[in-house]
Length: 328
Ligand SMILES: CC(C)(COP(=O)(O)OP(=O)(O)OC[C@H]1O[C@@H](n2cnc3c(N)ncnc32)[C@H](O)[C@@H]1OP(=O)(O)O)[C@@H](O)C(=O)NCCC(=O)NCCS
Image 1 (cartoon, rainbow, N blue to C red):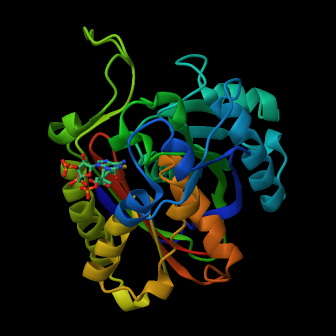
Image 2 (cartoon, rainbow, N blue to C red):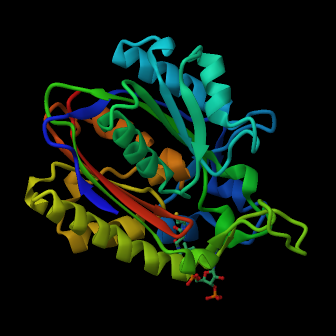
């Protein structure tokens, strides 16, 4: 799916909040559980540390402060929100949805609230959904949450996945604005490749395997990721008639610094245009892009008028890009 934003009906991000669990887990700490070491992890992934939620913390606990900060920046009260979408593969539970839980905790009593799943691409998919509902006239003010606690799905005996993932969440408010915000979206999925990154025992399909942990074919996912990050970015830029030189800030999904470097080189973006924070958080799945947006704002690269290209990819296999003129 690819499309330009509806002309004359501008929608943008008017508030952003992020939050991560307090606990920092270093590479050395993981090396106490599996045969790995800090040097290997930093060289092959760029990750130095990640955050991990406590046993009694669920996604709504981590996402709630992010939602409050996003609403505060937008100058809105939760009761103004009529749509709340949570992109995640680690909801508090299958139902009630984390969207409904957050709507209740926030006091967004008039909001349609639900969860959606598109692996690590979830945040970009949810942005596109919320944009579509606002542009179509169904919603006036939407809260979009991207967040995951992948630490809850890790096999602490599998070094090939244990070292990659971390926990975090972000939230953005989307509203109609006067100047151009979103320019367009590109979203895709390849269920045929889904077997390379999957979670057995998590749904209605019966598996004999009793454990419920992430399974991954790292090399296949690496090849997929480097391909789609480039293709999706090129497709959305071409559809929106924007050149690579026009892009001010590139915010790719933070999975592995080698994947990001590969895509950045292929796309021809100078490294100072690329937001990278995987070293501090690891791969936080749907939390990754909002956390990177926060860092891009804080270091002064994302400012009013910046053309921001976000591209996610992950389980599904899925990918997606959003192109946005930053209006905040
Ligand atoms: C997982 C990943 C980091 C592995 O890096 P790699 O350079 O491809 O490494 P390989 O799989 O070729 O493994 C190289 C060696 O390191 C070993 N190894 C794997 N994980 C290790 C770890 N955590 N510590 C130490 N050694 C490790 C392998 O067993 C292998 O050993 P061998 O040569 O004796 O067989 C990389 O494939 C990757 O990032 N894939 C994408 C994953 C991803 O981003 N998933 C989420 C997408 S949203």
